[in-house]
Amino acid sequence: MRKVVASTFVTVDGVFEDPGGAEGFELGGWSFKYAGRSEDELKYQQDLLSASDALLLGRVTYEGFAKAWPSMKDGGWYADRMNSLPKYVVSSTLHKAEWNNSIIINGDVAKEVAKLKQQPGQNLLIFGSGALVNGLLQHQLIDELRLLIHPVVLGRGRRLFTDGSPVGLKAADAKALGSGVVLVVYQPAGNEK
Image 1: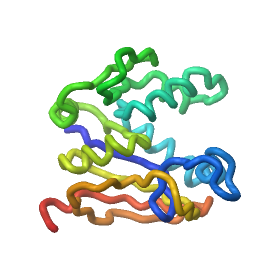
Image 2: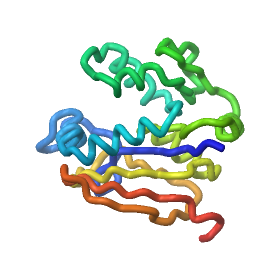
Image 3: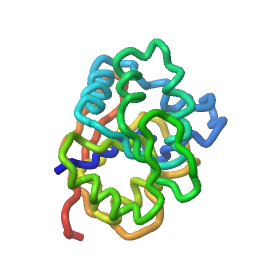
């Protein structure tokens, strides 16, 4: 059985998107300022992608990736893998997915993801995709939630976790990376409240 692993960049105050023009940061600056700045973070990203054989993405993340990854000519192994993996994009509004090996999921998302988990293979990897992460957490379909907490407090912007039913998690691992980012790995705590 496959696992669903979500890996998401967040600030200390839980923001996962750039609110645009945050004081002292250019667009995208709060995360890109730290991305790939240390060998251990690069290894983490490579190991994460190596352990996965499909991407599971929300529409917004998918559209951003589909615009960027196919044109990355000097991305080496990582770019080749991103472009070649099957991509399942969850959207009720997207009617055509042109990035190589993309399939749209627009029905009962929980049911479709549960079916994907039952297939043999490696991890189903989610990058970003806040609404998708929240929905799958509510349906207890995420096996690992990996937060890359950046040493930044923005004070505004869309938060990763939205209003909804509480979800119990237990810390499985934590590590400070050389870039100053802290990786915290959570797993579901079961039905504990």
